[in-house]
Length: 500
Image: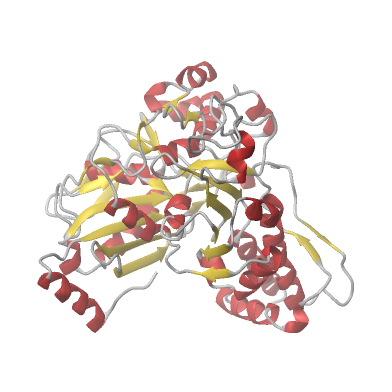
């Protein structure tokens, strides 16, 4: 995503004035490690200005490595700082706000006491809220998950999914739920706060990511959830993806009051939206995690195999129930009642980040202080050298996978000649791509008419080793596109949004 500065920025605004409009849209992405926002010109769909900030919001969990939670006030403080740095000349022309964020996770808050925007102030103060329990949370064991009813949905339930996390609290820490009376993702909370909503409004995309939601009927499995111990009072209202949730209650950093805000969306769908130019394209996004997907259509081989007739008359409709055993390929709701075929890996840039932290810790134990930025720079340079190619085999699934949660990482075929830093780095990058390929192989893409891959995500666009390994694994042309950015995608979704 490119931010326009100086003369180019002012030329765009001047062109807008001559055309009788300078309208723009604000796009927001609340990611796992950072927050982003951007202003997009409605007519040209160019990015006028953008801001990004790392949140450093992880909170130690009482469950150790089994838990994953983040500090909500810290995250939203970082976001508000980003929005405050956008040019006021442009924010005053915002006509819609789009919001997306990390899928699956959840947080709780108390209505009427969760936030406060003081008079004559843009800034919201965050008060009675829980931590945000992220998609990386592993408190729900396989034993616990197997005790839950089978969802009336084509999507399985997994640890880190909102409904699973809330059900875990209802059984193990019910006092947590009694302290609050609202629940949603952190980006649902942001929309609720901006619009002053009584109850959170969630898009179909986010509801599906929580589990126990039927994407065809667009309803929660309320009876199943109540039987399992979760009252329907905590379930957000659900609307179509791209539909408005409400309007900005007060002006916010120059954005006028009553500006429409769309119901928050999934970051995967928003990062894919700018890139899916046709049904022959697959999109790979590698940031904290990693995903590969393509849009389902009548012509997809997957649709033909699932249809009783030789040629289906309707677009893809998912099965009524999840598969008997977890599968790496799933179908996520996209826009306009369409679906994405998705292989979503829990292991992406977070694996490389864990490796960098380990190298840094080893250096400290040897008596040297090396900043992570130096380690990143060095390992990527070493891994890109031709002699870094080796027979080392790295299975990087240190965070497990949803279809195989007990899976551990593994390194094999080690010899004295392939344990240099460069070769280990190259093997790790190759392992990340090999893992993605095992979940959605080249043969599946070819069967479904995919002829090219477009890559996005901070980990992929900054790492040429991953790019090279991706082309090698799929034997298809891979083009990197900086527009594969969730904040930009949420702005595009807002431009295309519809009133309730």
